[in-house]
Image: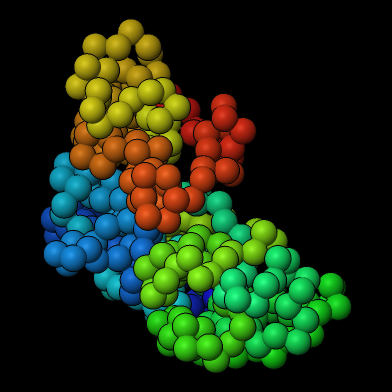
Amino acid sequence: MRAFKYAVGALAMMAGLSWAHADTLATVKERGVVRCGVTTGFAGFSAPDAKGVWKGLDVDMCRAVAAATLGDAEKVKIVPLNAQQRFTALQSGEIDLLARNTTVTQTRDTSLGVIHAGINFYDGQGFLVPKSLGIKSAKEINGATVCMQTGTSNENTMADWARANQVTYTPVVIEQFNEVVNAFAAGRCDVFTTDASGLASIRIAKLSDPSDYVILPEIISKEPLGPFVRQGDDVWLNVVKWSLQAMIGAEELGVTSANVDQQLDSHDPNVRRMLGVTPGAGKNLGLDEKWAYNIVKQVGNYGESFERNVGMDSPLQIRRGLNAQWTDGGLMYALPIR
């Protein structure tokens, strides 16, 4: 989701400036834990399981950074944040990393003192409706009531799309995400609009009978989601960025959590550099040469993370689509480690 109404002003600028020369990597190493901001509960991306253990695609991003920096993917403190809290928590230093289904936008990269470190999920705003309405297309929702969360750009995107398509609707805007879900489930609105991944999560995890609901085919925006760090700390930006690139690159090279030990004997120079057999990449990042090995061994490559959390092996059953490797027609294209 994209927050559109920010408290940008002086607070954001002061927060960004105050951290301009911070050394987050040194702080994390001294502290011995990565503090990572995630959602308050978003199945498939960041949510606690029955034992209270946080899991999901975004949580795996946090764990990958911990594996790279500290050699242990479990050395993560998960900090649940709502849409209104997320950037302030990062600006203030409450968290080291924000991995919370947050859309990369020009405004966020330039005016909040934060910057994105890559894309770990390509998404777009969509619509969820009860099957009982018999709606097959978003253009059929004329006159409907539409639930959405305040503090996100869903309001503006919805308004722009409706105006362009001459669709009238009544917005039901609520601050807390779970309250929006409850309102939709209770029938206070006909339509729920947010990122399509969020709709899939809501349908499976929040509604009593998922088969009673359908996600409409239209996607009305681009929502590239990814981790954010503070501006002015390029060393930490590189660590987070390349942790994600290692996961994407490992999948492309066929390196998995199951075969990574055997791949240490690979003759492929790209594999050898990534896994630290040929040294250099770790030193460049200020990390142990086994940084990427630790990520793959303990967390898995991007494909493994995708499939177990949100893919066809998960309850959400989201197809790879744009999140497939570039060799399979998707947008996941790893930057070369060399």
